[in-house]
Length: 98
Image (cartoon, rainbow, N blue to C red; front, side):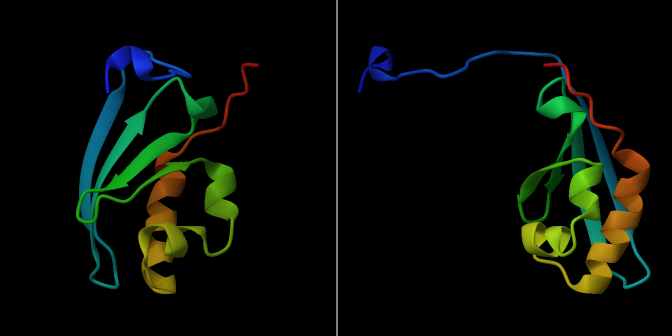
């Protein structure tokens, strides 16, 4: 298939900032995360679990959603609570620009 056969909906490049952090919570679960800040997604962060490759776009509304982190990252309730506590410090407010 040649490139002209693709129907691009979007194609852009931007400078981003990525924070790499590793920590162990009280449950002894180790978290290896890449947290990418971008101008996309209304200020939400791309949070990647480097051990599993699972990535989610996370903002404060997602952290408030019960069971969200457990589902996305396949965590226990205790592990998700520890991750949530950390992400509360990292995830800022959402900015609607439209």
